[in-house]
Image (cartoon, rainbow, N blue to C red; front, side, top):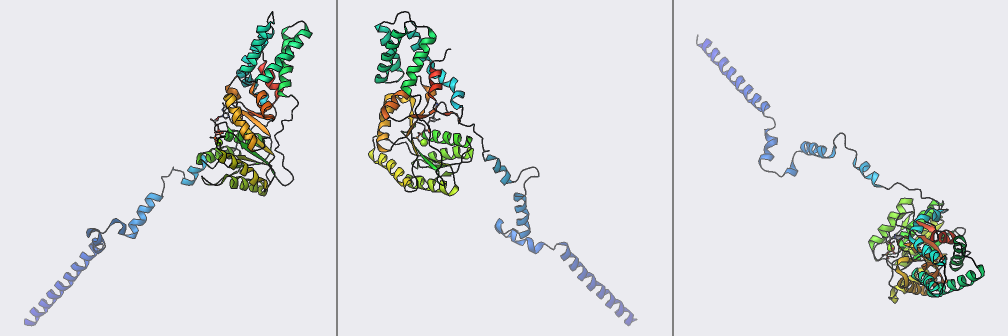
Length: 393
Ligand SMILES: Nc1nc2c(ncn2[C@@H]2O[C@H](COP(=O)(O)OP(=O)(O)OP(=O)(O)O)[C@@H](O)[C@H]2O)c(=O)[nH]1
Ligand SMILES: [Mg+2]
């Protein structure tokens, strides 16, 4: 009996021990992560979060919403599409209406005076004044009046068509109908043509450089631009925009860099690329500051170590009249100007400045700017110009 009781006791104890250990084991399996969660409780910084959590949060940031495009593709559309500018041929004809709008009041004034019933001394004086008001210059105005007086005497009659034809001829003589106005943009064998664009602040140098690049690209040429206006970072950006639109590379350096070295590098790039034409935009320089003007001469000399300069285009703002001409004269003394780009002819009725500037500088007007649009630059055509001046309403 005692043995039986002992046996039962042993079994009960054994059962208790087994049951207890089972309970301990199952409690552990209920809270397996307790030890791992301890760091959070101890206030460890978020950066020390479990690797798994970090991965998950990184994933949340990196994984874009299903519809959002990848970042790279979102940036791409900002690149401008290459444009195909119209060729140079017929540009001035296309812009004739704009010329007529700005210049024909001057032409109509002259035609009315010349057709008046009596051509007395006062009328001739008025004709001369009208010419001078249009910035044609005193000498040229006197010459035109002189010739017209003689012709009217010989002609006897004065009907409108005859007067118009006579005036047309006189104006064309003054402008120079047969003058060579070719902008020398043709490459020489394996060397590109080099054009320097110079002029006073704000006359339109950078705009004209950009427009000219478009004219050339429109004619099927390859162009490299040199941003030698290093005084302002914005000037380089402005040129970059023009070049970017037609795929013309722009050689540039940081603000304050030596303009001559930029010009030199641009010509080197043009040679390496086998480009047809290199156009160098320069800074607007105050004609009164000898140091700056000397620097412009240096740009030209440095470029000439690499290649001849085919064309130095002086950009002149048609609205600045006598003042602009005075400044232009100083430029002509420092660099050998070979052609004039007359800008903003759309903004003034004083188209006679063409006659005066050519006479003053002995250099032909080769290009005219007729607006702020990218294709508002045209090779200068005297006949189209005079016809626009004398256009009937
Ligand atoms: N209406 C009109 N505006 C023009 C013409 N050419 C240039 N402009 C404007 O003239 C302003 C000055 O042009 P820019 O090309 O910056 O002149 P810039 O000579 O390079 O000036 P700086 O670099 O400061 O010396 C701009 O607002 C041009 O759009 C033109 O033929 N007609
Ligand atoms: Mg500029």
